[in-house]
Image (cartoon, helix red, strand yellow):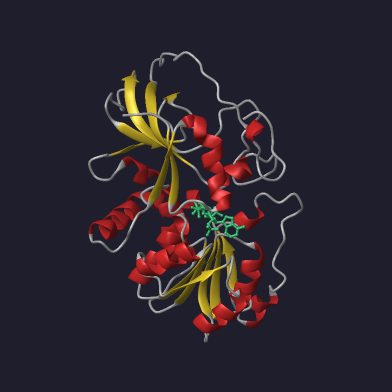
Length: 327
Ligand SMILES: NC(=O)c1ccc[n+]([C@@H]2O[C@H](COP(=O)([O-])OP(=O)(O)OC[C@H]3O[C@@H](n4cnc5c(N)ncnc54)[C@H](OP(=O)(O)O)[C@@H]3O)[C@@H](O)[C@H]2O)c1
């Protein structure tokens, strides 16, 4: 990372550089990264402000989750040929002592899935809707960013739990995908529909759980349609991440009072001790055909910047992944 962006990052935010490969020291191993996870949170890590994790510093390697194969090892717990997931950064090779890395099995699931449904975004969806959202069978559920990595899994989990699920996404094609492919009960195209009117149609008795990935105006409109004892999960606010002015908060917040509702923030890392159990459940649902995992994969580390922008333009479906080297 070369400079801190204001608003939407421009091309000069990052620079691609080439170095000779160093050798792993005692206790270390060398990974050849194959897939890098592209996440909206990366935008937040560029800001020099207090958050749940320290910002990336200027001239540091851009932080990112990634999955790759161990090609040299001086660490007895990590062997050559094994695959691992961890904070590789946006790079083709990384040396590590293994702290924060875990092994993944390419025979159980395709590698890119470990960056998404079986990785950070799947965990976010699982704990966000089931624990933070306290989902109950039969709830009416609204999820924004619904065709994205987290939202698409949230909606499908809620369907598995026999809830009525409505997704919000940008464009008719994504809305059709939510209903036809993922089994949502309905969808709202926030770029073209009358959101308030559609919420009234879909939720005549109100929303029990709103899973918020976008913040801004959509959060305000959802607040205006809550059911008694509703729960709002504040997972993210992508509509605000590139603001040049302060983040716009909800003005409709007294709806929480009237409906005895709650709004709770979440950070996925708080659930780390239970990731293994969640992965088993998500994997079972995938195997049973109850949960679809969609990865949208682009190619080439030199295309990092253009691919990253797709998170904000919405020109992608499901989990955005960058392939940075061949197997
Ligand atoms: N709290 C946590 O621990 C945690 C963990 C992971 C992710 N998150 C958050 O969860 C949210 C979703 O993450 P994700 O990985 O699943 O990303 P994603 O949904 O796969 O990608 C972002 C999507 O956001 C939509 N979008 C972009 N700008 C928007 C806007 N102005 N208004 C409404 N929608 C907009 C785009 O879809 P459309 O085409 O539909 O616009 C885009 O595809 C993000 O806010 C992220 O920061 C939080």
